[in-house]
Length: 530
Image (cartoon, rainbow, N blue to C red; front, side, top):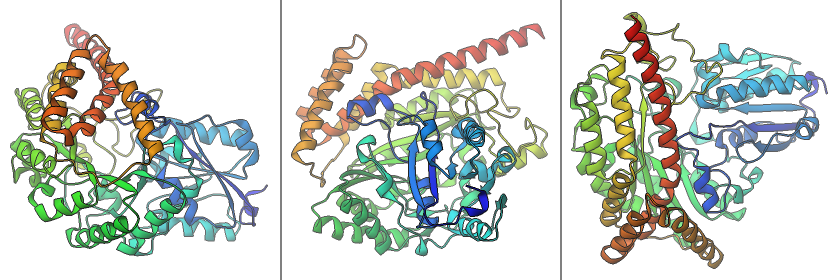
């Protein structure tokens, strides 16, 4: 089929989710296998794009994190659509090349192509920014017979007009959870953050009835279980979130609480007991928070003052008292760090009981305030417009520090290694699991079916086999489970989940430690030679 004929009824659109690194913090495939899934979550961006493209097209979704992209898939297609984030860059570029070998036009969008369009010049159509705004521009250009194009707009999407993603393209059994989106944008102004550059500082939200439509769509398709609100800050617009939560509660009660939830939020959540209670009432169980650092000096310098309003440890424990496990992000490499950076970070993570702590090296991402400042100071490696993976991988743990650090680079790397080594030492991880399990007030609303209960029983047996009969974790696992079961049975499910996650983190942490050690040795050799 020629490109100008793509708009005909029945055009076959192949949606391809490209691979993430097997050793990514979020790619806990081993844990997925324990619960009978293949990958954590389906590609919400592509499902949303499918709902925005002409609905008389035929769609097929291939998630290469679940199964391979075959030549027969490409032979079926008339056009290939893909998109993704920075860690998927290498795979997206390879997909463009492969599709072109099959004489197929390629449409590319998503966060990384939007931030770094020059890297994706080989794509036939580059759809940047928010799809609700730019996909219609792309479709209109197809009507004019365009065979290539670059579509960008400064306009922000009106979330009140957002479509329901094409959840029907998912094979639910492949995934541990399904994502939906409530808001875009964040009111804060953190120097290193690219979210406010991509989506703005006004938190735009869907209407309560839109969220209910999405929940109903998933329910009608037979999905039950974990739903993740993928928002970068779920509580960015508190006035609106206080309206959507009662609607979710009413719908959930009417449908027997078929779902439980997770999301990402600012640590200021801990200041609002009404909001935490409302989240508890609809069964929110996990919240990811960008803590970044416990240092007040660093937080002030990077303009993340909202994290200075309350003790981080107290805030995490407060959120846990409302039945929500806090997962958190930390970053090493800020300018105002000192010699006690690693020690302070370790103490914060241990005292707060943050089991799932993603500790990364600072990256100056394209189009951020940080990048612009470092470029003006002459400290940025490269031109600041792109971060190319070359032949390797990019994420916060395997790369980063793409600038001249204020502290000696070796000190930053040694601190990074020290934090990872400590927090993912089995004894320290299980100490946090115990603290979390004992402090968790887990009042579950979601009730699994009998089949799901059997599946969970099998999953527990797998966790027990992997963790309970492992030389390094066996005693710690059984001691933790027994203590939580006796002293706070409501925290038992959370403790088991965290023990399961350590099956992934143990290997992932060692991978990061080995990479960091190699980098340290290379730098030591260069320093010695100089």
